[in-house]
Image (cartoon, rainbow, N blue to C red; front, side):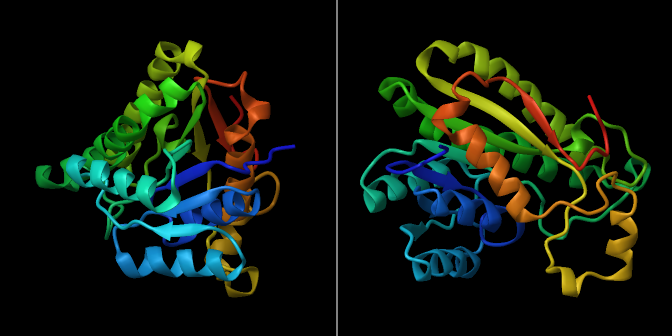
Length: 252
């Protein structure tokens, strides 16, 4: 079950953290993985790790907020891996040097970068892969989002949360527009995450973990496992949904 043999996957923001964890898990299930990141060195590092494990991978650094770059990046994937993209995971979503700041304290010049990355960045990548998916009658689009997209927080993430809300709304509509084609579109909304090994976790991270009902923070491997299911043949009846992956922090 949940085999991805013969599938070509593109994971954005996969040079580190959650994105790298998703790339590892997809590759372990047999997918050929295109590793995207804004920074070439990070994309190549994840690619090298996958290749060292005997997987098929290619590094495709580009800026998802640039529509032309996204189109060119997808074309590069197709040439390098010998097929169209079957599975897109829109994981890139945290602007560089993101600061927690209350809306009243933000300069209006800061607003756009959240919308450009989380809304337009995802739209650019969807646009680049969607038509071939619909024509071939199979495809998976998985949007990585955040609980901040549906739950109000006072921690200074209002524009980040708003941009996540926007892309989640798009996913619900797109899923129904193309439901009859064999292409599914779903969102996985993440709760509190820890990208560090357990032995590197600080006391502040452990304190956050105590707030999660299951007693720990999420890991990149947890997200990768969820993506594998959503991307599989077995999930063909799942579309237009937002899955909350958060250790029970919220139940909707």
